[in-house]
Length: 103
Image 1 (cartoon, rainbow, N blue to C red):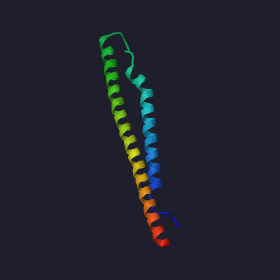
Image 2: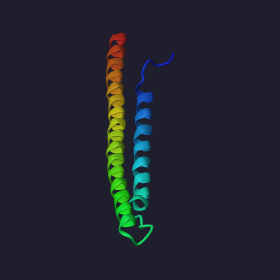
Image 3: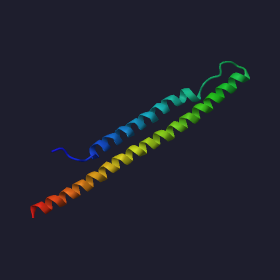
Image 4: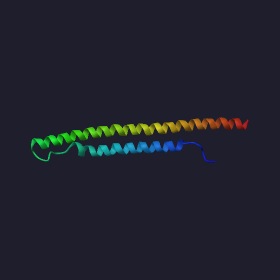
């Protein structure tokens, strides 16, 4: 008989979401230097302002990405916790049923 629980699947999905969030944070850390330290194309004021604007936009996008990845990590952790709670309740209910059947 196949178990009628989604606990293991939910835990696997939660783990994958958390792993993806961690990879996203690593990718942002790797990209941050390239996005925030652009040298001006020329020595004039327009190039300097464009480089500063690009760096500021890059920093904002990195911050936004970090917030999104942290939220994904929290969602993954919540799924793992939910799966654990379901497994605990299922195990307790099975114990009660088995105990009643043995009487």
